[in-house]
Amino acid sequence: MAVRLMTPASRTALPRWEVSTPAAGVIGWIQESKIGRSSRRFFHAYGVHPATGKTANLENYADLERAVAVLEDFHQHPKNYARFVL
Image 1 (tube, rainbow, N blue to C red):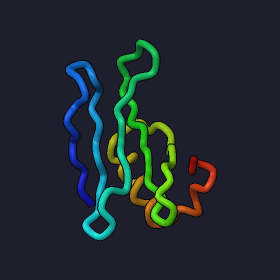
Image 2 (cartoon, rainbow, N blue to C red):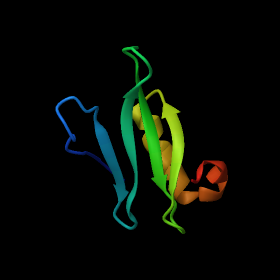
Image 3 (cartoon, rainbow, N blue to C red):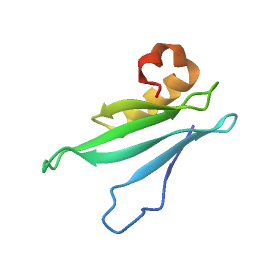
């Protein structure tokens, strides 16, 4: 599992990471976000369905490690996340 910080789209853009595996390639992305004017950071995970290639919006997580773990689990067990696939 590799997590790579992507080049920001602008100076003010929040960080975004690409998550990949050697066997499958890119399995998803994680976008850092803030809700409202809060200083608390959240990590929003977007997974790529391994069979269909459709994007799944996998919600916000309080830490980056948890978002990476959810992407890995989604890639291995996509049926557990059927309600998230767009």
